[in-house]
Length: 306
Image (cartoon, rainbow, N blue to C red; front, side):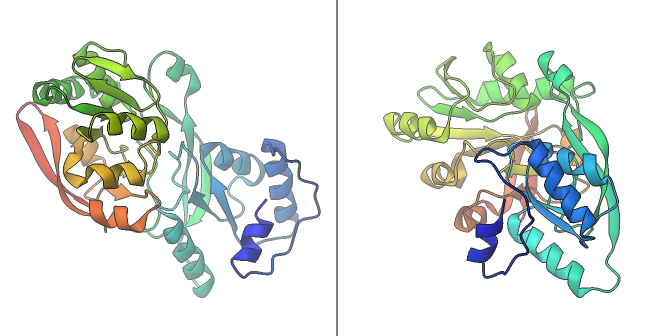
């Protein structure tokens, strides 16, 4: 779990004396973290999503600082850096400083019971310590749909008025996009990416390859509708990796439609939208100011981080 990658990066890692099966499990993570704890490591740097963060938390609680490299689908926890590069900077700064600022931040994961009832809500499982620098660490997802339904309905109504005939719409995940689906009279998946054209869903829970095939058949007449993650601000690279950098590059920045309620924008406390597509050129393409649909006949202009 990481030895070969570390060696390829030029490190000489100390390898834990444990047998790793071809398919690793939470138990393997537990065992590895316990060995690191026994070895009295100064910090645990890990890659994964919310499930991995929970597995690590179950062993060390808040006893050892951690930094998460964002590499999962669900990353609602605040232990994750905004990008892999930000994680590297955090770790480098931590070991270069004699008085690093450690902060207790949230370990979160989707509430499965709420999800089965059609709600997307993140539950708090505990706190772990991170070397905190606001520009490098993402916030925890602000969870729930209980107070924002009317505002989302207004956003959905405005989007439904703007849809064009003969244009394919790539609908990202989340409750705001679910509300748009409801307004359009279709059963939009909550966590998946769906494709909508001329009044109907033509594909649900699609992969990036499926999207590329379908937009090619539409002569690239397609637009992308996504919403930022509340409290964090990611518009690409968290939960919607199916919308790959090659798709964004192919359709262009002008094809991207951002939707958000004013409450969701307020939850960012002025922090910019974030992108982590895995392609620095596409991240740069998306940077700068962008329009956000916030209600009926309402738009805001918001900055996307460089």
